[in-house]
Structure formats: C-alpha cells, structure tokens
Image 1 (cartoon, rainbow, N blue to C red):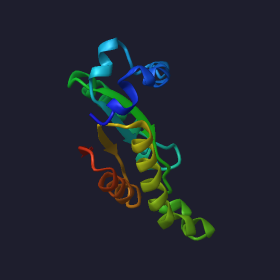
Image 2: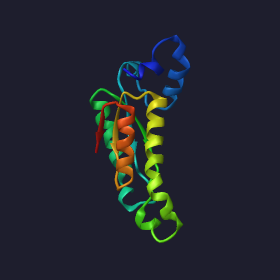
Image 3: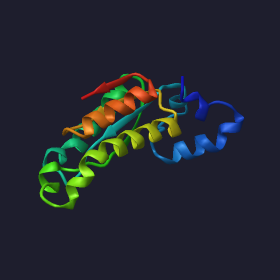
Image 4: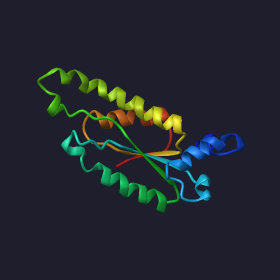
Length: 142
C-alpha cells in the first residue's frame, strides 16, 4: 500500500504518532488497513455545497465498514454566480488549478491509498478530476 510509506517501520514512529493524534486511528490494526482520503468541497460560501459535510461523514462510516481508514479534507470553491460582475470572476477559472494542486498535495503528502471525491459545480469537479489523474490511485466520485 502507498500508505506504508508513513506507517511501517521503526523510523516511521513519529509519523504514526501524528496520525494517531488525528483521531482517525481507533485500533492498532488500523495501520494494516488502506488509508482513504475523502476530498470534500463543503463550504458555506456556495449554496450547492452547504450539505456536503453530511455526505463526507456518511462516507467515513462506509469506508470504515469496508475495511479502510477514512481521512476527510476540504478544497476551496468559488461560486460563479456570486463572483460574476466584479473582479472576483478573475479567480473562478484559476481556482480549478488551485483545487487540482491542493488535492494532489494532500494525497501525495499523506500517502493515501485511495480517494473519494465529493465535488459540486463546474470548476471543482474538473479540478478534482485533474488531481485524480495526477495521483493515479483508485478514486470514486460521489
């Protein structure tokens, strides 16, 4: 597993300590399970995203039931409808690249074995798709 990079061997004891401190590890045997990222685009700034934390929480439960260890992280999101008609619109399209870069950074830095993406809207979906292609791990979009 990719996550073995941060969880196997005596030299990774500090890594395991930090991972335990997240609260995601409920038993020592969790270090033998795949680490699954749940990349959520919840934000209170976009109406279509306000409910996505509930989806991510449900997915955490499903990942545990399926034998994985879930870790949720979030991305930014810009609402074109709110950004329209002022300088904010200059940031909408570039946000796609920021999303792709941030998702890739999280997955690579934390050595996840798989990812579930919880996107919405027309910049976030492609940003997450771009990241999924870059990291080349099993990925599901919900």
